Each structure stands twice: as structure tokens, then as C-alpha cells.
Length: 352
Image (cartoon, rainbow, N blue to C red; front, side, top):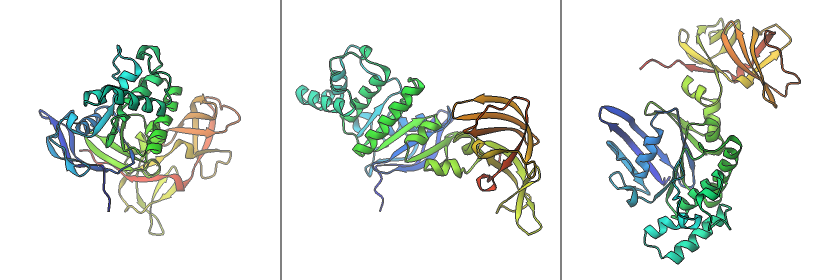
């Protein structure tokens, strides 16, 4: 039987008449890293603040290690948080920053510093104890913030957009460091981000939020390959989403026809659907048979791949050509084939 570290049970949060979180439920298993992903205003940061005790729920329950902590303050919860801005004390050196939480909990200074040094060694910052935050890099400051949270040995560790202040190359390195630490130490982590590539790279599970609700949750691969809605398809990576209608075929099976190309579906005939096509699953072919004609309107060379915006009878399509020998020219006419095994047909979302 599952014994989750954290449970959200129909939790809602309102600010006056505005409902930021709309009765969501989920569980965070022990030693699991779960990302809350979604656009600005979707409720993910409010959800994180509810876990931390920085906001109190309007309704529902929050359980930590089986105990209801819904009305407890942040200091009464066995939770630590790594903030987007790092929130390091500029006048304190590195070891004092890491030891600060322990000393605030009335741990002796010598023991607090010993534990702080052990955490700094764990995150690769042994020898940096006496430096001020201004004397180390952004990535190193992030590691100090992580060490300061880890030294408290929390039941759940929270990350609030921790990589947003770093450049792209450093962001990749630090996210790998966070994932390595989480797996090596068996940490239970709830991680907030708006970056789908970041969420996919580090998460055991991703919860996608939209307008205060959970749109879909699951392992990154299932969300990418089997999105439940056009919103999820578009948010989990690049996607071409085409509106279509299912029709009855001569064999009795319903299908969708895209510019003469039939795609089978189990949905009944007469339904409006979204057809999701990933850019990397479209192929440029020399054979015009069973292909969609198009004209390249924009061509971009990205090293390992070429990216094209193509005008077609279905509308503009994004296409990625892996390992291409040359960048095709803008204005060039091409033929595109669709692998039916990679086409995802989704019942169209209803307004409201």
C-alpha cells in the first residue's frame, strides 16, 4: 500500500473572488521528483506556496507524512524551499548561509557548521566556506541554496523555478546536479518550472496545470507521446495541432483524412478532433504519392537538425529534419509524409 510523503486532497485557494487553485488532488511519493509545469498564472507557484505553508488553503486538506498540516505555518512543517532568487544573505559567508537554518532552530554553532560543511562537500563546494555570495558564480550560489535546504533534512524539498537566473549551458549542468543529488540521497522533491525541457529532463512524473486545475499528470514520456489534450500536446514540446472531423470509412472504422491521407481512430464518426503531429515525425520525401505538398517559408540550421516552417493545405507545419546534409532553401517545394503510428488523435476540447 502506498505511503505518500505529501497528499493534496481537493485543495483550493482563492484570493477574494479569484480562484487561483481549483480543488486539485495529487500525491507525492517518497523519493520521487515531481515537477509542476504550466504557463504563467496556471496556479503552480500558488500550489508550491500552499505546500510550504506560505499560503493557507481556502478548502481541502494538505497531508505531510500522513498528518494534516493545512493550518500549520511554514516553520511548523518539515519542508525546505529553494527560492528562484536563491535568497542568500549577502553579508554572510557561504558556511554561515548554509548553517543559518540550523542555528535558527537552536542547533549549536559548532554542530551547525560541521553539518553545513558536510553539505557543501556533498554539492561540490568544499573549500568555498569563507567566500561571500558575491565572490562565487550564479551556479555556485544555486548550490549553496540547495545545501542550505538539504542541511535541514526536510521530508519534502521544494524548488521554485531554481534555474531561471542561469544561462542555458549552466542551466543544463545545474539541473543534472539537482537530479543526481535527488537520486543519490533519495530526496522527495516538488519542483516548479515553466520550462518543459527542464521538467522532462529531471522528473519521475510531471503534473501539467492550466487555469488552476490539473490538466494531466504522468511520466514525461507518456505526456509527450500520449497527450490528453491539445494544450498538453503543445506545452510538452513542439506540436502541430490540426482540427479535423472523424468520418465513417467503408470498412466501418472511423477515420480522419488529412489531405487525402487516412488516419484510423476509435472515436465515433462525426466528432471534431485535434490531430497532433510532432515535428520530428514528419518526413520529407522525394515521392509525391500519399504525401502532402508544401512550400518552405522559413529554414533554420540548428547544428544537429534543420527546422522548417512549411506552408501546406493543412496550414503551416513545423518540421524537423534530423542529421540533414544541407539546409533546404526558403521557397523550395517539398512533399511531406506522415507516419500514422505517430499521429495522435484527440477529442477536441470544449470551450468552458
